[in-house]
Image (cartoon, rainbow, N blue to C red):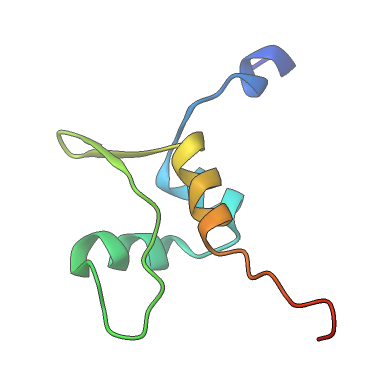
Length: 76
């Protein structure tokens, strides 16, 4: 069982954990990796590959979120 300190310093996320963190489906992440850039589709976050193992860093997930924030004008 993980302690709160271990959870707080977690850096690598599995595909399922990354999907939950981002609020997207595992299918979205998987398709993004397999098909890369698809027309009219938001590209997924950067990932790490260790052999067959796929992992996402917390920094990459947070950067992906930041890249997709839409700032609205004050009068909108």
